[in-house]
Amino acid sequence: MSEHCIIIGASHAAAQLVSSLRQEGWEGKISLIGDEPHLPYHRPPLSKAFFVGEKTEEDLLIRAADFYVKNNVDLLLGSRVTNIDRDAKKVTLEDGAEISYTKLALTTGARVRKIPFTGSELAGVFYMRDLNDVKQTHKFTGPGKSAVIIGGGYIGLETAASLRKIGMSVTVIETMSRVLQRVTAPEVSAFYTRIHTEEGVDIRTEAGVDAIVGDKHVEGVRLADGTTVAADLVVIGVGVIPNIELAEAAGLTIDNGVAVDEFATTNDPDIFAAGDCSNHYNPIYDRKLRLESVQNATDQAKIAAKSICGKPVAYNALPWFWSDQYDLKLQIAGLSQGFDEVIIRGNSEQGRSFAAFYFCEGRFIAVDAVNRPKEFMMSKRALTTGQTADPVKLADESIEIKDVFN
Ligand SMILES: Cc1cc2nc3c(=O)[nH]c(=O)nc-3n(C[C@H](O)[C@H](O)[C@H](O)COP(=O)(O)OP(=O)(O)OC[C@H]3O[C@@H](n4cnc5c(N)ncnc54)[C@H](O)[C@@H]3O)c2cc1C
Image 1 (cartoon, rainbow, N blue to C red):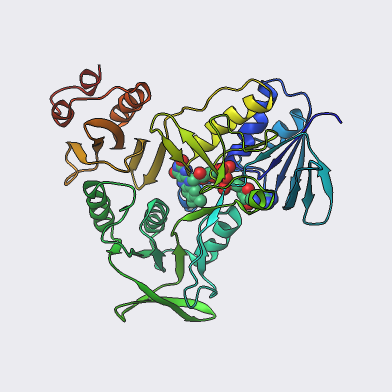
Image 2: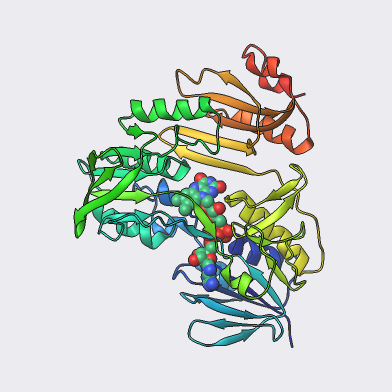
């Protein structure tokens, strides 16, 4: 049989994989099967520029339609793969069609974690993951309307900022004691709480949701303390779970995601995985990671392409991420989980620019840089090369950041 690489899931990792496969010299057939009806598109603007109408659907495309034509890709969009038969090396689609492969890549990503609140089925209640979902929200947005966001993570806060931009009144409900609790230091949470409050968002922490209320259409969210916050729109952003079921049913190893080695290869040498669905070993942090970021989806897809083309190279990229809210560009390099010391450069209690440097047992492990591109760039380089920095100098703004990391 002639070479045929099937890619399941058509998003960030998949678009990069197509491009990298051809760059690495893959001459065989490529089929891209995605259950969404769209060409791979940039997901981050869904809660940002696209949400407020500053970007169109066309602007979201990762690659224009002719890219897939030029690269001779068989596109099967709006098609879901329901089974992988590893012995026969074929996949089955929802409509029963079977397609054979020689190499298979899983870029199935993640889906939203759904919480069965009473009233979640009401019109005007949304999760934030897919273009189709976000397009539907536009019917419920507009100046003077009100929104409740359930979840004070990045996506919840970005959505809150976007809704304020279009003149809606916004309340964020967070069960933990601070927003962004799982991912940042208290100083960074306090900064975002202050900014959102200054921008007119009502942030309620340690607040549980009792029910979403309304008659056909959402009218509000009743909290555990008995109060009800009025809402024309409810957006729930409480995390995602990896799409592993297909891989699991095929007998691939699962470990908080599809387990892959540093070559993006599963326990089947002809099956690869990349992006949000996969869990890989990261040598920089010496542990297994399942990341939810565009950086990981694209960088890991490049590694998968090399492996598929028989030129394996180990994956050892530094994780990085960003979040845009109002005029604030947060850039994150490294992983702060497990930090025992935070150094703040600048003033997080006033103004709109500072950086938080995270340390663990004296080792520099991550940075959150708000409107501080230099701090981000220098930190990213230092983290990649394993360089550390003097916390005292980091905190001292009279020393240029380039002189701290030299
Ligand atoms: C609103 C929002 C804002 C974000 N903002 C940022 C940001 O600012 N910065 C950042 O780095 N990251 C951000 N992210 C995260 C980022 O978008 C993801 O990390 C990225 O999309 C992961 O890409 P992926 O290719 O691994 O998977 P996904 O984008 O999850 O795509 C997987 C695709 O596979 C499809 N699929 C699954 N199973 C099957 C099947 N059996 N058959 C066919 N198709 C299937 C899915 O429907 C989906 O279309 C954001 C995400 C969201 C939702």
